[in-house]
Length: 313
Image 1 (cartoon, rainbow, N blue to C red):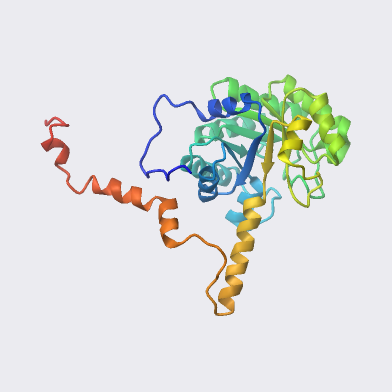
Image 2 (image 1 turned 180 degrees about the horizontal axis):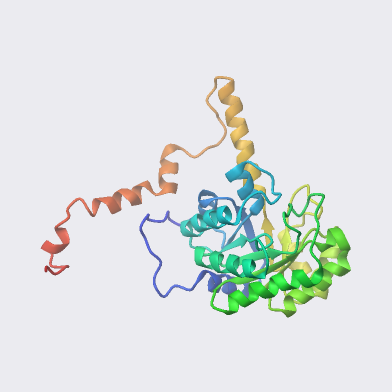
């Protein structure tokens, strides 16, 4: 298990960028499992569990930060701020949910640049009408194909103009226009430069296989219990041709369930008894020992000068 991050530790200057690390993982050819995070703590837990990457879920961020549904209520600024904290908390690459790009082509480019500056390895841009909705709920609408492709082209332009970030292009057209239209959009996204592709909410395993077979590229599967798409094993997803599998609600649902059980126990005037990390484990996870060690370095302010490490004026 990786050690907790010292609070002031910096990455080596020659360390590959988040985007480069994600590219390297994808080149390995194995299905990349992406448990989704909602904040810095959940991202840290994902990293310490040994996963190679994570995905900042817009659904989970809206739920945890605002206690509101994923219906476009959370803003660009709130998402970017949340993502910056997540990216700073871990060394594994993070994919960020960029929703619709928050406006026209110029807005999309700014969103991509800001996500890259925040430390994301990739950003997902989708073709829904704003305000967007969770991909497995009713009431979705998508923009026309030309506007959808324009968004992805703008995102790719921002990348090519200096933002070191991968573009994950998402279409929700399966639910509104059928699979053929979704496939055509995914192909068009690839043609304008998208690095990764995501056709949301296919209805069965046959459609999932068709997506990977008909549109060359690296595809993302969204694994959501109770959603519209079948929940398949990682091995089966890889057999079908998917490069990545995101699990958007596993941690959020687990956390809600654990909190509800703990609150029910307290309401019954009992101490919660479910398996929980002890206080020492929490301190280690959050880096208390590393903080204390770093603070100790500054309890003797003249130590470096006395050792001759720093010259005087």
